[in-house]
Length: 170
Image 1: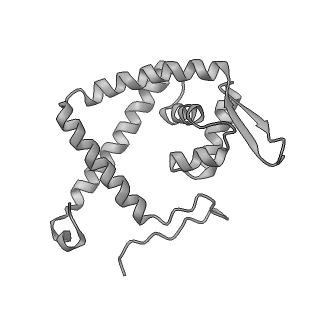
Image 2: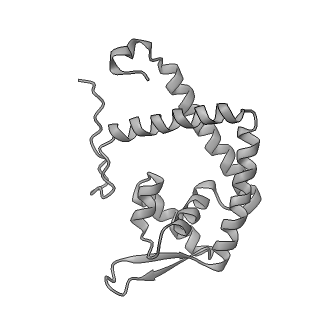
Image 3: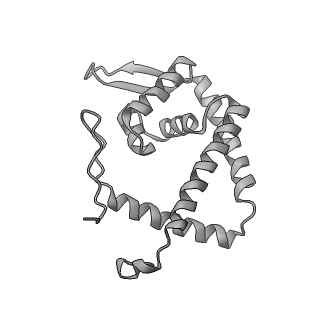
């Protein structure tokens, strides 16, 4: 594991390659999801999250799990409500709160999306051995932990202000 003491060995081109590859994976996944089930991979992720959280599901929980700003999550949810995959109900306790649930059409789309996701995983990851996939997962988990530590995560931002990020650069 590289530490700050070994920073001279860290190559920015590796991070750049990771960012580009991540973008390409997202672009390809969106094309496949749109082609196969007429929603984006991100919208599928919203359906998956709603199905995995015990009711009542709140919009803020989805934004946190997606690591997205609440306004971009709001737009995705609005589209999913509009096309009948999610229903929104007001909380009986706090009328400012909305609860989200999958409709039957949403559950059907989720099931189809899971099959598309499995197909994508086979297409993309099929070039690796099980051992290599284990190594990739180890690396990705460590990267996720490192980035998470570096972000001053505050899911309830106000005035659209992003949180201060501790970069360690003076």
